[in-house]
Image (cartoon, rainbow, N blue to C red; front, side, top):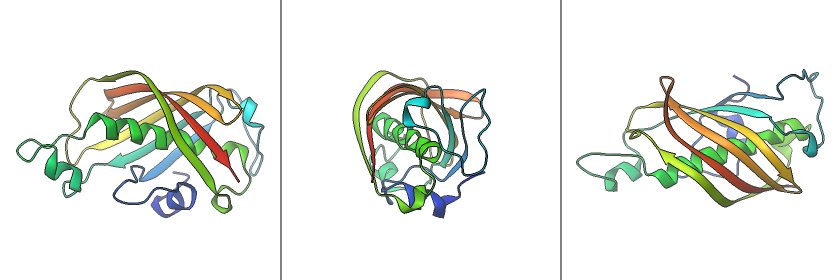
Length: 163
């Protein structure tokens, strides 16, 4: 693991009850080994991969209303979770990501598929692969797994500005 929950909070601007990343396992550029502290230009992060985790908590307020007798994590929250995971590509392009201010906004979702219900107490693995970068706009292919079973997927477009 490269980031624990406290380190995640140093990078993402989100907070409970809308923080959906517990830890980050890796942020890599396939086929390329970066030295410690080495960063790349944002134009070079195509195919970058982020692997992150989140555990759905039984007592999360969302489950109380969606739905009381059969709690299911809403698809819109799953998409938000995927978008939050994509944000960690900043680790590739910034030497001190915990010292920067990130302005992130979800711009679009394509090809979203919700294949199985996400329930309380599930350990989720998020995999995000950068497809395209145009200025601050990043498009990523995202997948959400539980026990290696694909639960949902979407292509996420987000504005990612770092200051």
